[in-house]
Length: 451
Image (cartoon, rainbow, N blue to C red):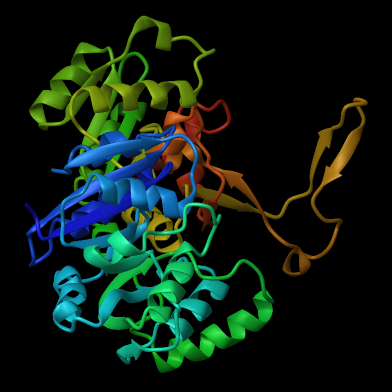
């Protein structure tokens, strides 16, 4: 039987569970089992979890925090029980052994570890986590603060004092109070840290919090603004998808598809490349370059199929083939002038800011009008102010490069709830071949480049 049982409660944690479990299974202490207690996830949380050697998956229909933990413990076998949130990522390979070492003292009922914010945690969360979870180990004789996002308890104590199955939150502190009153102790262990993007509180003044965080970042920069290694660009799994309709276009005889593929293969952060096409020439290109080809059905060669439809279909085929990326970069090869740095900048921006979708936007200051529901013209944006006094608008350039998290694409959307836009001021990058107004300009510019 394993010495330690790790209980992970989940609900729609597809974007985090891979990193959580990767951190768990990279520990230097390996005598453990993992049990998932899933609360009706509607995404691929459980599917992703099962790619790891977990022991059991328990399904629950109503989430009560203490009961969910108890349900997991009841089917476990370890002498020590770890409670770990699915969106917490162990920050070191000694996380588990650092928790366990505290139980050499028989008076210790439970241990909880440090929690570190990530780069895109809010100012409130960064402030709260760094204030509450400090660098000094504490043995708590009267203080019953305890936190089950990252904790370990003694099973023999749980046998006598299980978690309360009625309270709707702070089940950890209710348990902590009970064991303290029984004469036992709690320990805070800073050498067992996890990354946790959520904070402890749900309110407070954001402006004030930013002021506090700015000081914390100067004094203790090692604790704020980092990402788990597996989420950092280069480790986070991003694939490119290039939808190609019909024959490959070569404006003025220039091979702009090859131009894009050469650029992508120089990226520091991009993983595999998929071509979505039905043209035999594209199939040969994929074979020659050792790229992946997704056959484009005839039904996708009609104007009524949106890019959302295309990417959702491609994702299904990618996953059917046993490939499970975390984000997809959509690229239209008919933009021949994108910069090499753009691809890696999109990935970097998305990862360090925790964004669903990132894309370039051409910075626009011109005066734009549109028709309203009454068929009248209305002005969009600000009035005829000088450019330096205006707030810019952004023309979305999705085809130039749109990076979207897989759960968003699976839901049938290109753009998620949290968005980042990379400002583009070079009009040349925004030019697309086959657009009525720019095709001739593209050809002239390509010819000029090769004079």
